[in-house]
Amino acid sequence: MNRSSGSWRGVAALLFPIDWPEPFGLVMIEAMACGTPVIAFKSGSVPEVIDDGITGFVISGEAEAIQAIGKLSELDRRQVRRHFEKRFTAKRMAEEYLRHYEALIQPNARKVQAGSTLPSALGSVPDRAPVP
Image 1 (tube, helix red, strand yellow):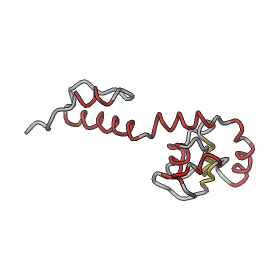
Image 2 (tube, one colour; image 1 turned 180 degrees about the vertical axis):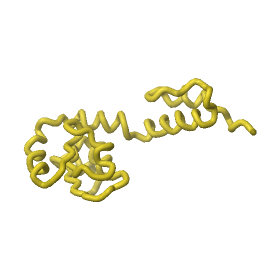
Image 3 (cartoon, helix red, strand yellow; image 1 turned 90 degrees about the horizontal axis):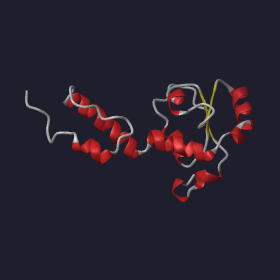
Image 4 (cartoon, one colour; image 1 turned 90 degrees about the vertical axis):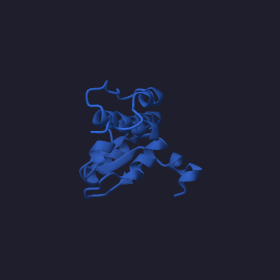
């Protein structure tokens, strides 16, 4: 599949039949970035990545996978994309890293709230960690 040409957009769903403890599953994120819902076995990171009934369906077996295919029309592809933007963009991840780093560097400092803008978060991080 050529991701650079937007080939995910014409796909009804990504079937992710991995039945082992997949630590993250980047392909699920790639699909959701294009608004493509994911049907995936409840294993590994799947329950943490997929919002069941919103970005796809978390299933327990083949029979549920078949049922999920029949329910794809219930999902809004724009909502799949919005959930991706809310949880998995580089900006969101950078903001979360900053929030955690700030808490480590300055445990008593004002906490950076999840969802705050990157420039304001950067302004509250010191140039270097205090020397013990």
